[in-house]
Length: 380
Image 1: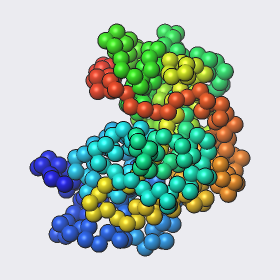
Image 2 (image 1 turned 90 degrees about the horizontal axis):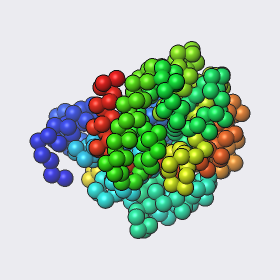
Image 3 (image 1 turned 90 degrees about the vertical axis):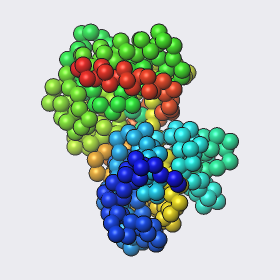
Image 4 (image 1 turned 60 degrees about the vertical axis):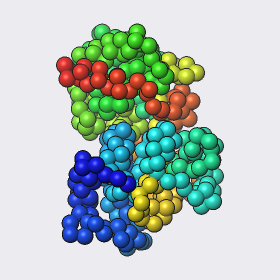
C-alpha cells in the first residue's frame, strides 16, 4: 500500500500503541505466526475471551475496542490495514464498504460455512450480510446480535406502553427532563430519524432532513443527561434520575438486569416508519479478516476458535455487556446459559422483538445528518 505522510504518521502511532513500532518496525511483520491484532467492539477484547486463545497458540494477541463502526473503518483507510488482522463490526459495513474498498479478505467457504448450521434463523448460510453482493464470497462470520432501540425503567414506564408509543415517548413535550441520551452518535441519528417518522436507511428529501433536525434539537433540549457511559446511564435509570433513555437495548440494559435490576428493560417498538412498518433496529456483528499484506495466519484460527461452545458463551457474557449469540441454536451452546443469564439478555421476548426490527444498515445521508446532529448536541 502506498502511504501519504498523514497515513504514515497514523500508522506509526497505531503500531506504537500496539507495541509494534521501534527499531524493528520495518520488519515487524516478518514473522507474524505468533501475533494477532484485533479491532473490535468491546467483549472480543476481554481476557476471558482472549486468554484461552493465547494459551492455545502461545501467541501475542492484542485487541482494541471502538465505539463507532465508521471510526474503526477509517482506521483501516488511514493506513492501519497494515496493523490489524481481524475486524469486528456491525452487519452492513463488510459488504457495502470494506469489501468494495479492498479492506478485507474473503474467508475459505469450505472451512467456515459448516458453522452456519448451528446458527439461529435468520443468521444461517442464507444471511446476506455475510456475503459479497454477488453472493460468491464469504466476507465474515456472525455471532453477537441484539435489538437496539431504547431502555426504560418499567416501574415508571410499562413495557406495553413503551412498545406501543415507541420513539414518540421522546417527542412528547411532557417527557422533557425524564430521559437521557446515551451518545452513541450514529445510532442516535438513526433513532432520531425514526422519531421524525423517517426510515433512516433511504435517501431523504430536504423536508425530511428538516424534520430530522427539528427532532434532534428537541431531543437534546429535553434530555436531562448526556453521556457515552452506559453504566452511568443505567445508574441514573435505577436511581430515578431519569425514567428512560436512548440509545439502548439488550447490549446496555443487560448488566443492570444481571445485577438484579430486572425493571431495567430494552424496548423494541412494535411499529414505526421502517420497512414493513417496523419500529426498531437490530445489530448483528460480523467478524472479518483484514486485507493486511502481512497478515497473521492466526486470523482464520481465531474466527474458528470463537465458534467453540465455551467461547460462544464467553463472548456472550464478556465483561461489560451481555448479548445473545447466533450459535444459541446449538444445544451445546444454549445449555451453558443459566436462567439468570437468559433473563438478563431478555431471551423471553427476543423472537418477538426481532420480528419488529430491520437489520442495521447504512444511512445514505449520514454525513449531512451528522453535522446537524453535532450542532444540536453542542447547543445542548
